[in-house]
Image (cartoon, rainbow, N blue to C red):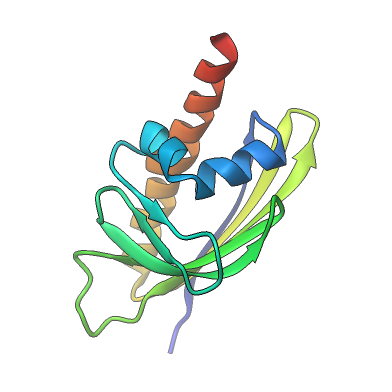
Length: 136
């Protein structure tokens, strides 16, 4: 059985602490994410983005350093197992290096769609949020 995964490193223009908060504070997620979110910041807690389009559970939580959660979009078949996301936040001269690994997709097609989706709907909008915050 093939394991479909996407790995990327992305520079975010904010500190690791601010980036971690932007992934775990529902009020901040709602500002960059374009929909309501729920994050229960502890192992086993609910992780939900984009008005419930994706749901999961927190699997790894190291304050300001690492975050892991399961990820299952609403349109995936009920029998499809959730995929897994792991984020690592490391200092970078411009802010934060995010190492993102998303594994266990049900197909290469889903993997490819999500690679674009991470950039278009999460990472770029979050960077835009931080840019706007600095301009205030």
